[in-house]
Image 1 (cartoon, rainbow, N blue to C red):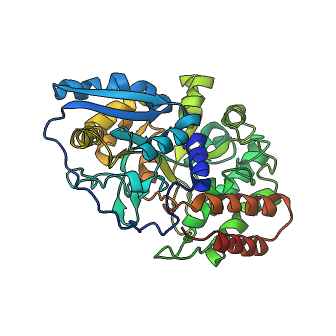
Image 2 (cartoon, rainbow, N blue to C red):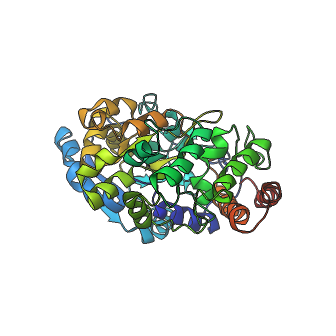
Image 3 (spheres, rainbow, N blue to C red):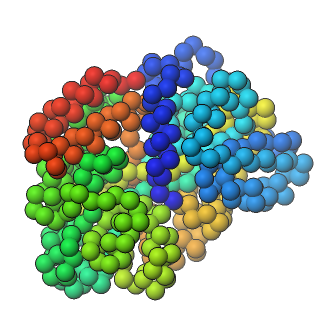
Length: 420
C-alpha cells in the first residue's frame, strides 16, 4: 500500500490545528501516564476505527480474533479519509474515542494515546516503522503495515540498453537512465519529482543516502543547508539539466504507470502499491518485463518509510482487550494473513518468510530496503518544512535558482517554522 495522499492531507490539516500544545515533542504537559496492560483473553466490545481499504476489510478479518477470544466483539467503523481528522479531533475533545485506531505515525494527537505496554513486542519489527510510532522518546504507536520506496525499472528495455542488472550506485543509476534514452528509445530515463506537492518527501532518499540528516541529534534545530544536502540536490538537479527527467512531469499514479508500461519513462522510485496498479493495467504477464531493486547507494541506501500504526487511546473504555487485539495484529502469522487479504506489507520481519511474500520476486527489494529505511522526525512542524522543501526543489528545477541559494532560503524558512 502506498503512502497515500490521504495521510499527507490529514497531516497538513493537523499542522494547522491547535488541538495539541506547541511544546517540544517530549513534553507531557504534566499529565501522568496511565499504566497499560494486555488482557490474557479479550472480552466485551472493542471499538476500532480505520480508514480506506483497511476499514472495509477489517470487519471480516478480525473474526479470527473473535474466534480465538470467545465473548469478545470487535466493532469496526470505516472512517472516510476526508472526514478522518475532524472525526478524531471531535472524539478526543469529547472523550468519546474508540478503543483502538489506525493512525499514520503523526504526533498531533499524541497526548491522547496510551503508552504501548511492554507485552507488545516490537523487537522483531523493522526499526524504521518502529521509529514512526516513537514520539518524544516514548512508543505510542505500534507499526501495523509499512510502505517503503524502491526502484522500479523495465528489465527488457534495460537489457536493450546494455544493462543486465539493477544499478547499484548513483552514478550507475544516472548512466542507466541515459542509456535507456539513447539505446532503448525511452523519452525520459527516469521519473523524478520536480517541485510539486510531496517532492521533498519523495526525494528524501537522496540526502539521506548522502549522509544528510534533517535535524541535529536532539531535534533542537533543522540541518538542511549542509554539504550533504547540497550534494544530493545537485545530483537531483543533474537529471533535469541533462534532459534525463521531465521537469513538467505529471505525478499522478495513473500517468506514472502509463509511461512505465509504454516505456516512455522506464524507471521510477515508488512504493509497493504500484505493483498492483501495474498488474491491473497490464496483467500478470507484464511481470516478466520489469523488476524492483533497492535504491542505488551513495554513502548508503536509505529509503523513506511510511504506512500505518495502531494506537489505543487513554480514554478507551476497554483498553486491556484493545491491546490484546493490537498484540494479535502484530503477530507475524497475522500480518502474513493480512498481506494476503489486503496487500499491505508486514512490519514484522519474520512475516516476510511466509511463502506468499517470499516467493514474489518483486517484493524482495522492499524487504531488503526496509532494513535501512527511515522516517522523518515525528514532530508537527515537519509538514510545513516539507512544503518549503517542495518549493526549494521547484526553484532549483524550474526557477533557475542555485542549489546553494535554495538551501540557504530553505534553512531560513525552517528556522522560522521552528521545531515544535
